[in-house]
Length: 355
Image 1 (cartoon, rainbow, N blue to C red):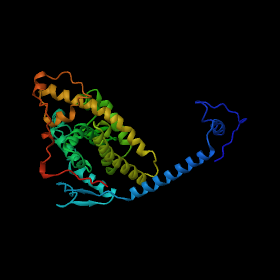
Image 2: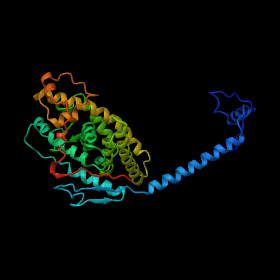
Image 3: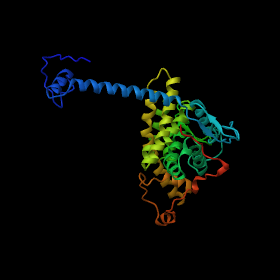
Image 4: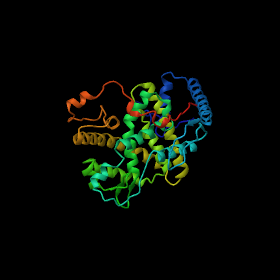
């Protein structure tokens, strides 16, 4: 490659100006002893390395990862598989697995006129009850890739990710025509009720997030892949080995989401980027609303169910100052994974074999 100087071939070269004129930069290098032959060898070596990396990448991409999943029972939807393992050869089948898994772990009732007070219907909604939390836990436990992790690693991911998935499911049911959220029992919630019943001052912020999220008009396939990206957040994991494993799973979900959007949204090249930009706001809302709901439950009856406490309490982010001493003393400090209910319904997590 030949460089040209657009001035008098006498440009000043220092740390600040060395990228402005490549010709004078190389002339200065030659003047202090750099060999032209050495430069050609170096460029040739880099070219060979780039060719080898390209061949290696293309070979790796041709190897499809096979996934196996046991059947997921559902009363309203077809099971993911029958009583035997299913071999998955492409991303499309994996997306179908995630869609069926989402439907089988979420019960939604159509809006009905029920002669009940609004606050009672709010309390009976599944979103933040033990039943709703266990449904989110079941979804996260069965999501492809989770079986690659140990029980301790899964428990840590569930503790950090289940509440975020619950918020994401709630935001997905926002109706822009009414500017309301629809809970699992059919109750429609506006901004005022959201602030007075549960979310407090964060109700307005969360509804703003729902409005922005709704503008993306996600399909069910895009939504379940986003849930996988949110759940497998490697940057919150301690330990390099575990973080690397979770990162590889998250990268797979990111790539599937990107390819699916590229294939089906040819007119919006920035759609995937817009989606990722919302995740930081979701994480902030996750921490704030989790603390709010935890304080609310403890102030009402003084007791919090085990699974709800595990997914709402974050040692690193929650600053719960009104916890009673006797309640803290009652909490077992030893590792306890009984709240995960691994053996419920005889189901096993999804297996995500390595390439």
